[in-house]
Amino acid sequence: MKDQTIVVTGAAGFSGLHACAYFASAAGGGMKVVGVVRDEGHARAAEVKRTGAAVDVCELTDGEAVMRLMARHQPDYVLHLAGLNAVGPSWNVPAVFLESNLMSTVYVLEAVRKLANGCRTLVAGSMLRFEWPGGGAAPEPPHPYGLSKTMQVSAVRCWHKLYGSDALVAEPSNLIGPGPSNGLCVLIADHVRALRRSRASGAPAMKPFRLSSAGERRDFLDVRDAVAAYDLLLRLGESGRVYPVASGMLRTLGEVAEAFELAADVPIEWEIGDSDAPSPQPADGSAVRALGWRPRYPFERSIADMIAAAPQPES
Image 1 (tube, rainbow, N blue to C red):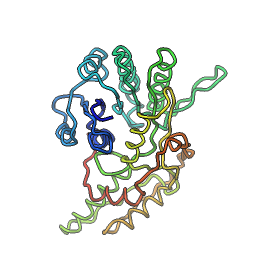
Image 2: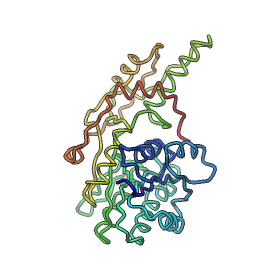
Image 3: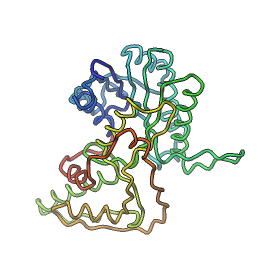
Image 4: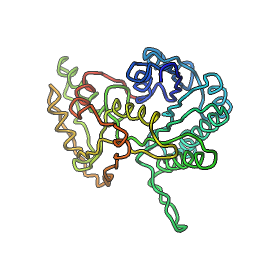
């Protein structure tokens, strides 16, 4: 993949920063990486540059701007990571989520199609999408965010069917690891560092960290392992296919709390709620594993790296 170009959208985000660094490195083929951010003044544009990527600006919900972006760089690969990733806010502004997650993907697919240069596109979906029902039954989306990601995946599959687009989807589980994220584990790591500072300064005790429950289960995967899977899928994945990318192990939030207690050098107090939210079923990651992918970062290593890295929340 050396001497080839990859465009990474959402470059300033959690996965984007890791992806830019990976593909610019020898491990990722030493590619020319173009990291796409939304505006000139993005707070983390400098961090994107430090990964070794060139930075370009594009509003991905503007189809003509996306066309110009792809024409400028003539990429061999596109890793489309950009979009809105939050369930709660999607209830208030569903159209914004559809525009950001569905239409930006359509514009990327269309720009790549019209380039007609053999570019391959990998889109990051979500395990929170739902399956369309058969037999004419009404769909039952769990939330507008899930709807937007379901329609995003449908667009990729349809462009492959209608136009033969060389595009596929990776659906990562709950990503953790060092870097800027609003994910639960990073928020706990931020809390641990705040506890350290409070203890060192003699400040009053902090409020306990609230977990929705101790029994909910989640699949946690290090973002660095996810990016390695994206690399493999860009090279070897089957067009039009959806690939779950997950550790294959569900952990309760109580087990997550215990792991942080073992890793932290300060006592952590918890407030445990009684949420009865359903836990997801284990994802079947056999397809990407069949290509040779294996997670390399144990959960405990991810936690230690998060505590040490001092990331800032996603902006």
